[in-house]
Image 1 (tube, helix red, strand yellow):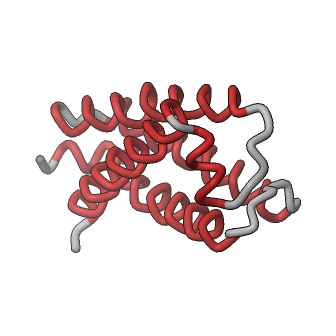
Image 2 (cartoon, rainbow, N blue to C red):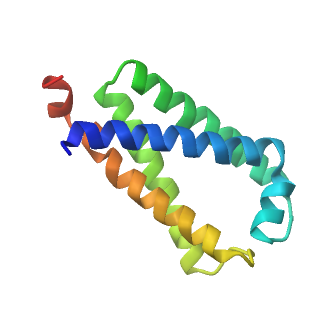
Length: 130
């Protein structure tokens, strides 16, 4: 699979995963906590994270998919990488209260894969061959 196909696929995965997580966190954060079997403490933070996921990842990915550009690719790659690093750090520091920790671990793995897949979207050469 060539790097432009990987970048496009990663952008689509980022859009749909972020839409799912974002809507759940924004609209029903308590349900998210129930799924993870985590304490529903200060769900206002979860709503804020859901809004950020929808605003940055969903809208950003949608815009990139409509009109690919290296600048938007860099924004999406940086956002996905920072999110993956933050989640991985919290996992390593045992900051998650979830009893269903495998769901958190799976989310971290997905975030790392998406971030890596978005790397080609930061390269000008991807847009010159298109």
